[in-house]
Image 1 (cartoon, rainbow, N blue to C red):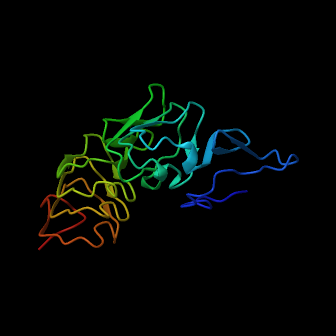
Image 2: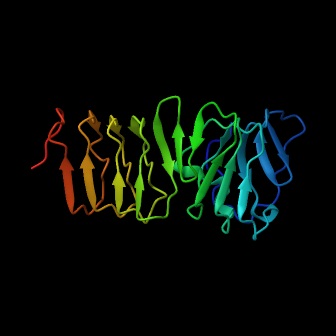
Length: 212
């Protein structure tokens, strides 16, 4: 087993030798995979064109280890395949401004900047670089660290059927004003951790929370 992020930051690592008796991993074209080649574990910096502006992950990949794509320093677009099954902000470089999900992906969908887990109605990650954004109707959960790549964000409009706001959902943002809809039943204790909020208002019809 190779745990996540083992090779994180190893910019000088250009080759990985796999023992002839080890059938658990594959290293080819500068990429390290698991045996099934559905988990991308590492990409060498030397195998990446530094002028690449668009990253396209090949079909068949279900998972990418955290920070594997960080050597794509000039890329602004990330295209994920229909097979992809595990998205979090940890796999997305800070410079990414657009995420596209291939048609046929039964788990995720994207509007270009916001990625949703349709199986749980969760906003998983946002890469908007705008100062404001709107969460789409039907979203039930704002996921952990969902806006951690939205570092310019100052204002967000939450949908009126939202139910949960998870841990550090707005980490790294510049969020100033929050209005919690009546539908929200759970706010993680550190959902708004380290934010210098100017106002925090809760809909008077909310039966679970009140604000002064």
